[in-house]
Length: 132
Image 1 (cartoon, helix red, strand yellow):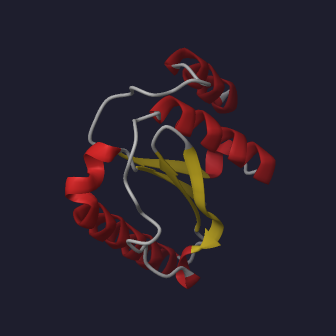
Image 2: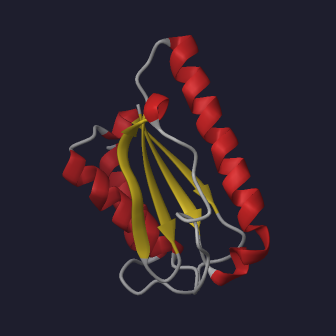
């Protein structure tokens, strides 16, 4: 299973940066335990987003993954969530991951206000394409 985690790194997240890091690391621990308990391989790609998408980790085995740090998670800028989702789908296409083996996890505190490349409709169409 491939998990794609999208973390909002816009400026409004500064006040909850520590909580976001702690919450994500708890999620990572849950993934590790689920993989161990269910004897399945789980890989993780982590993308931080503000007005740009930043690939932080790509296709990492969760069992070997260290926790997210404050050095990796630095909030600033706007919230370009549609761009982040669209870019994440393109990332998966490049990895040739089968869509039925993918789970998206998105953490944000706000609304879309900064996408320039992807619209909500474009993202929706891309998702439907892969679902079919």
